[in-house]
Length: 175
Image (cartoon, rainbow, N blue to C red):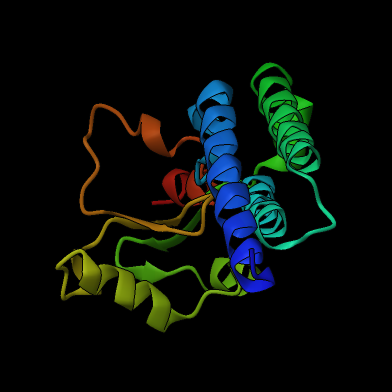
């Protein structure tokens, strides 16, 4: 068999087996493994891609080495999420806190600076939600995954979804 065809066939087989291995490991590890939760999840996702590419394209890396690499990342991710659910110290260490960026139509300048977010980025988030006027917004929160939550009103009975937002207690106690 010519070498070119042998290399392509090897890549095809390694790719198929690697893909199957990754799918099985991810199904076994649960939904949290690839969630948009924190920076550690992002690192694991990038590492998954790197390992998969190495498994498919590198002659020096065996399928077993790649599967062990995936298994190690999945196990570490599982352990970290298991610990974070059970330990407030670990949770604070790995998880960012959401932060209030806009309150009652006014930018929170200090929060924007600390989070390195521009007013333009907040306005873009409002436009993406179909909101044309900043003054129509009760709050904008920068979430732990880097996304923006736009809240147009707060029910007088409860604001329980905002209690863990950095900066919310300051503005709510000083209306």
